[in-house]
Length: 258
Image (cartoon, rainbow, N blue to C red; front, side, top):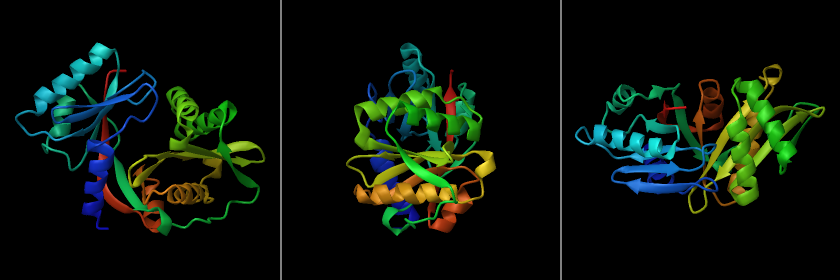
């Protein structure tokens, strides 16, 4: 499939027709905006908008009012192909903070390598309980240098409420968690999402990221999802491109509050 067609499918299935991604969350369409609202530890924000120059500022103000009334900080997930062309500048002018852009990439799950060898002494373990979630959070904090309390709570909630929609895995080297990632399955769509792939510094460059992509792509294909998608950082993009991922767009999170 051509990148443009794949991007259109992604926009329709995962943005315009999005479903709640966790317990206690709801997705609403208000005018030309699709948003998710949930508990404070969940992902709250705007998934899609179809705005023009005349209604963009009014829609932005409306979302700010909504989340303020809920007592929540939130994210406007802006894509390079969203309209109007100056939407990012309008968000910043309204008080949002733009974070680092990432590259939206996707590939056919069944076409990706599914048997990438692990380094000697490393094993992959499925995450099914609180101790495993804690290991994922530990890797996340060591790899990215950010607090993972919200991620830990979200993953625990998903595993308890709807384990068929999320799969997490941790790579252990002699019992120490050194890499971790999760796969978020979107029932009723062609897509599964690759999220949180991180490796502690001492273990980078040994193929763990590729192995975790392969592991999750195999599961996605087995569960009936044709494509896997990822918001790729600069460090991941070359690896994914070599594996066969296509670039569909870029996405820049814009955060408000918090």
